Each structure stands twice: as structure tokens, then as C-alpha cells.
Length: 148
Image (cartoon, rainbow, N blue to C red; front, side, top):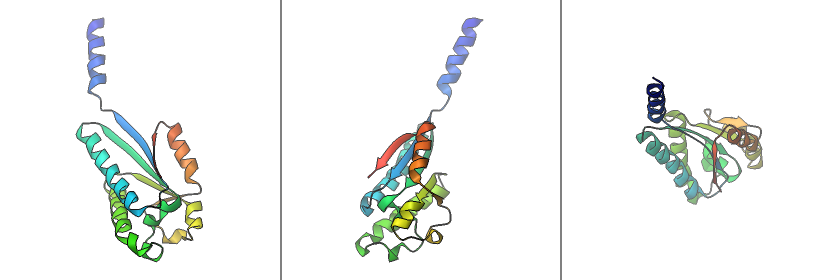
């Protein structure tokens, strides 16, 4: 009887999906790189979920990475970067609305880039300090993935 319970426990444990938890911390000011990372986050989620596991991802934004959360980013982004930022924002919006990814932008970085909080997309969370959020996620077992 003990062996049956042990076998059932092992089988139950083996059949449970793994949860992949990660906090993606973006501080890059390279628009092309930011665009590629937003695509890669979505692709990674797809790969995890296609294998039957769960992806629990969050994104924290600070430094030069904050431009993609602005409603009218064309006023603050170099003309050569407009297409990449537009694509990054589109992918970020998809991650939030369709993939349930939490995204937080740093209020200090907004201020440093002369961006008013009212200019931020309404579905983006604003944190007083995204470093505190990133540390909290790490303390909760999220792997740190850094985009610099």
C-alpha cells in the first residue's frame, strides 16, 4: 500500500507543470535592442507554454528603456528610432493585454527623461523606484534577466 501511494505521489509530481518565473529588467537606450527583447520575451513564453509549463513574467523599465511606455513617444525619440520604438510598444502592449505580463516603469527614470506620469500608457504601472520592485521579485524567486 505504501508503494502505491509513493508511486502515485511520484506520478502526480511528474505530471505537474513547472512554473518559470522571471523579471526582465530593461535599462537599454538602444531602440532596436529593446524591440528585439520584447519579441524574445513573447517567444520565450510561447516555448515554455508549448511544452506544457507556465511562464510567469514581469518587466521592469528604467533608464533609456522608458520611452516605449509614452503615449506620444515621437516627441522624445530620435527619428531613426521611431520604427523600433513603435514595434517595441506594440509588442509590450501585446505582452500586457494578451499574455498577462506585469510591466512597471520607474518614476525616477520618467522624471530623469522629462516624461510626465500623465503621458504614460494607462495600463503601465508606475513605481517610485523600479529597483525596489526588481529586488522584491528576486526575493520571491523570480530569475533576473537583464537588458542593458
